[in-house]
Length: 136
Image 1 (cartoon, rainbow, N blue to C red):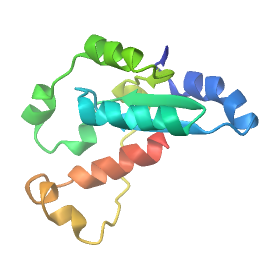
Image 2: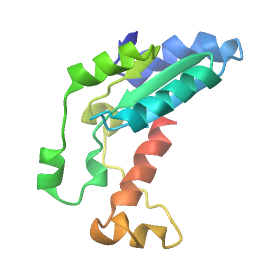
Image 3: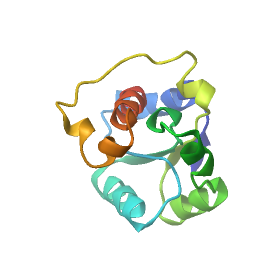
């Protein structure tokens, strides 16, 4: 299993797969992996030529500094789980890698961002939109 910390390294590695029209399965996560995450990784493995998972605790999804600080992080355990599942590649960027400058983009979720989780965490879904658009 390969682990990359920069987008440039990951892109360079994946370029040959793209050039050969291979299917890249991607599972973005914030780590603290559980069976739900691993089932998505297994689907990516089944449906793709190469599987890629990301582990990035996205600060823009948190409106409460304590929630971000207390978010569970165990990279070694997460990597062990992904390796056991036979995931091919893991992208583990830093905050500076993903946000070299402040991301001020605002996404329109048509009100979905104001219910359920979004009702209690203002800006949460906008942060999801920011990071997903960067990862893809």
